[in-house]
Every structure is written in C-alpha cells, then in structure tokens.
Length: 289
Image (cartoon, rainbow, N blue to C red; front, side):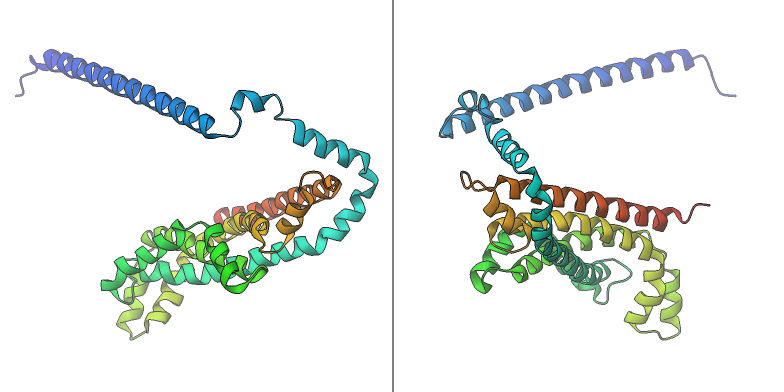
C-alpha cells in the first residue's frame, strides 16, 4: 500500500516550486520589457537625430498634407464621378496584375509545396533545396524584385506581375507545405501500389484533401496582391498606383484625383475582401442552411 503521509509535504514543495518559477518568469519578463523600451527609445532618438527636422518640430504640421488633400477634393467634389470613371481602367489593370500574379504564384507554390513535403516529394533528397528556394522567394520584397525587373524590362505591368508572382510562390509554397503535412498519405500509398505516376498520386491522392485550404489561402493572397500591385505602381510598374503617385505630387493641384483614386482602392479592397471572405468561409465550413 502506498504511503500517503508524504503527500502534504510533496504538495507544499510543488506549490513553492511553482511560485518560485512564476516569480522568476515575471522577473525575466520585466527585464525583457525594460530592454525593449530602452531599445525603442534609443532607436527613436537616433532616427530623430538623423532626420532633416526633429519629430517635435514636424508634429505640429502632421495634418497639413491630409488637410490640403481633403480641402482641395471637397472644393472639386463635383468632379469626383468623372475622375472615378477616368481611373477605372487603371484599377482594372491593377486587378489584372494581381489576378495573373496570384494564378502564377499558386501554380508555382503548389509545385514547391509538393516537392518539399516528406512523403510526397518526387525527389526526397532535394527537399531542402526546394524549401530554400521557397524561403528565398518569400524573403525578397516585391518592390526590390520589381525595381530590378523595371531596370531590365522597362516600366509597365509585366515587371509588377513577375515580382508579385515570385513572392506569392514563396509565401504560398510555405503555407501549402504546412497544409500538406496534415494530409493523409494512405491514398498516395494506395495509388503508388497500383503503379500510378507521381503526378497522378498528387492529383488524385493529395489535391482533393488539401484543395479547399489551397483555395482559401489563394483568395487571401489575392487580396494582398491587389494592395501590392497598387504599391508597385509608385515605382513605375503601372496600374492605379502610378496614377496615384502622379496625383499626390505636392503643389500640382490634383488632389481631387488622388481622393478619387483612394475611394476606388478603398471600395475595391472592401468588395474583394467581402467576396473572398465569403468564399473562404464556404470552403472551410461548407454551405450553411
């Protein structure tokens, strides 16, 4: 029979040990918080000293530019419908860039994910290589790739599409590979036993399991790519971002055009977010009666 006499002492020791551990974690957390605040303060002070003007001097004028933009747009509010129609083709070009780059990125990301997942890879020894390729694609910002491609190919939507597609392939390759880790390998093994090729095993044994999650992540990435394609327009990659850069130049008297472009971008992102959110919910949870 077990001796229960030592139980109270053991409970007390466990409680004391837990309290000591909790106090130690609080001390470590406090030290890390103090270090973080100190580093933030030092970084802010360094950045403020290196600016042309200090933050305190410019804080009083922080609303000057937005006030001027809104004031000029309000004075010419009657021209907004015409500006919206004028910039609609540029918005469509931006959406096309995002859609094409997302499609290319999904295809490339799918292959990277399948080739870098254990139990699914066509060449198991090359799994680390394909994972590093995905890491490199994901690590380089779109704007850096776009600037290099603009230098090589000239301005326009093609450099933006390639740059966003490369980054999308890396990001989706990582997400898709994590989804693949949770897929069952029994269908793959069954297809392999009857002589199916690698492509057939992936298409029939893996894709049906991970397809809804793939589409969900692809729709989410499409939303992100719309914003990215608009930003890349600032460096000459075409689309509505290029028009926005020209309209926002200080002192040109075109802030009403900038306001129209902001409205177009805002409503487009809201609509795309609502539609893709609804589709993702249907894919992950099914139709609700």
